[in-house]
Image (tube, rainbow, N blue to C red):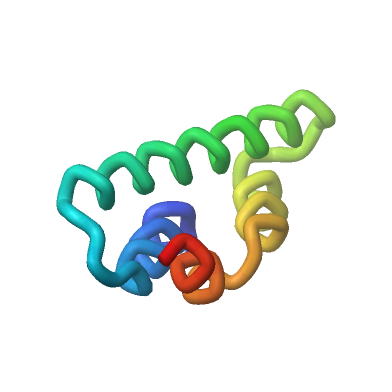
Length: 69
């Protein structure tokens, strides 16, 4: 799963949110993912491994979506 898939899966778990709210959540998630990946990159991780580790640290996307509801 890549970061786009992860974000899409989180968003698909959301209920009763407006399109504006959905896009704000997408932006927030993208920012967190980017920040975490950047930090791992500074520690020497290559981009692929940084993405894998970041998404694992974020947790199950469906659970994240349920929590955001």
